[in-house]
Length: 316
Ligand SMILES: *[C@@H]1O[C@H](CO)[C@@H](O)[C@H](O)[C@H]1NC(C)=O
Ligand SMILES: *[C@@H]1O[C@H](CO)[C@@H](O)[C@H](O)[C@H]1NC(C)=O
Ligand SMILES: *[C@@H]1O[C@H](CO)[C@@H](O)[C@H](O)[C@H]1NC(C)=O
Ligand SMILES: *[C@@H]1O[C@H](CO)[C@@H](O)[C@H](O)[C@H]1NC(C)=O
Image (cartoon, rainbow, N blue to C red; front, side):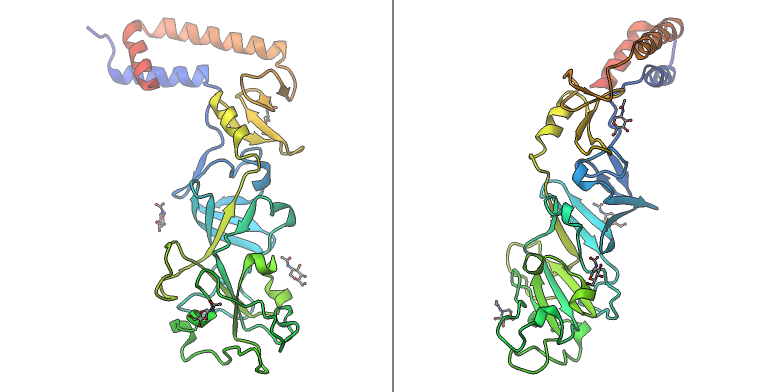
């Protein structure tokens, strides 16, 4: 009875989708390696939230995070907990201490501060800083900023194989040498600039477990960054609910709802448009497109019911 195979109908519906164009395609979501890049992040200009522009780059299937202090590999993006996990090959771990100022540290552009910040329970451990370092100003006074963060600190870190046979100076406040390692939270000093802090290296660790972990070999080494979207993504939810894709105006910086062939500053059901009213020409284009679709449809698909039911089942 059916005059066409399912293959034909599949091909036909693909052709129709191509010719007739859906308009509301998710143009901004992408993948980099096995990491999903979605709002508020993007790797294409005009996509994502303005506060995260020029931040992520997909290079040979490796997602890179780029800020003032350098580039980091993104290991994970957790959209539920609003966090990113970063790796810097110049960072020390439990297995090795990297000196010589090779690490990036972590310095954000000040305008990114409302959007991005290392997690409060992420510990930065600064290694081999000079006695003149701003960290030890007032040294040998009592005002060392060095302290444990979420139960993680240098005392434990010294237990790592990388420190074998142990640090030269363990950092008694009244000794004449600064500690070999000084642990701080990002919030305590606002920027991990190894040059400015006169440190040879650094490590960064975080713990995903709610309880204190046994030791430094159980910590995760990397930088955990929390992100936030001012306005709690309400704009984006409204935009997506009307079939749009969330983006921003890459020149003026405001939120934009990308609605296929036009952009809105609110959502795709709204009349407040950005980038001009649709012209008569584009209206004609749309009508012509629709006519072509109809013609293709009528001429090629005789078995109308079957095609329709195929399309219907594909849509749901
Ligand atoms: C992504 O791939 C890397 C290896 O390339 C793997 O270590 C990681 O667990 C993967 N992540 C997910 C979420 O699948
Ligand atoms: C809509 O906004 C996007 C992202 O800013 C831009 O690439 C595109 O050209 C805009 N389209 C129109 C019709 O203005
Ligand atoms: C780090 O500090 C040095 C010296 O103060 C400065 O020249 C440099 O620009 C800073 N780096 C970043 C990424 O801010
Ligand atoms: C930091 O950890 C070390 C080692 O466990 C401990 O001796 C010290 O009291 C801790 N400091 C704070 C402020 O918790």
